[in-house]
Picture: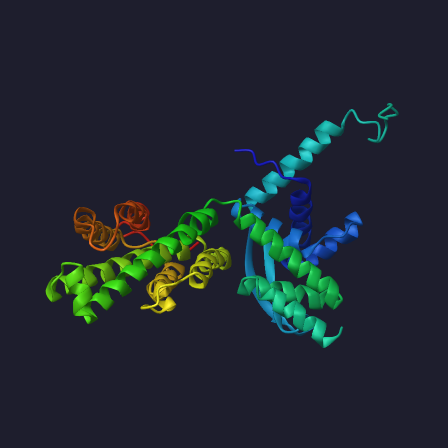
Length: 112
Length: 240
């Protein structure tokens, strides 16, 4: 069954996939804020992580506590194969739908 | 970062589950956010979590389907138990009700067992169905209690006799929080006992008028809900 991600879900899955073994709440949030230039609230981050985990697209577990976090544990995140497929489907859909758009390289159409 | 402000963040984070609280507070420290940013972040997460919970029908069922109406009816049942107890202590009242000491004791016994059963099963359903929205169910249970306590005008009885149901209800809530479903066999026995005890009350009207008796059938619904959602033998307990 095809799972269509939302925009923020795609950003989160992609950021987590890029961070690999270092993917956890604060790191994913920083990655999203740095790459998009938009503020990412903790509320949006953690509710989306839970939703994606319930869909089987992410797996999370509590990691080790570190001193720079005041001795508090991290919520580690890993993208599941189903999550990778869903992100790939989203990316392909965006690529396909963008083909005719004026802002795609090599086109000069009038999209305004 | 001022310490008092971070205490507010810690306080707000108590509304989150333990693991999530740990992760969120750690993220805030690591991101070097100000206490106010942290407070708004945590409160935003709490609001989102609650909003998501209320998208399900379970907290609505627990609060408006069980806690609110049952607390009204259980206060009436508590009053009946107190009244039956008072009749036993006063021979004149017993005679007026055409009861002997033995039959008066029987009435008190089955009313007390029914009250305990109703309150316990209602509490169990509320605890199991509204694990993370228990605050709302509690408010919906206590508001009719406060309303009735403030208007209680029976001189011979203490107003706190209205709250006899609270102890078994709290016991039921605690059990419901621990395991969201009862074993099917136990649930069935409980529901049958409660229903069987209601039959003499229905036919004889022992201390309860007909309209109250009709309404009291609603109090046995949580017991049958527990049967409907009962855990089959061999099935693993479910936590939600």
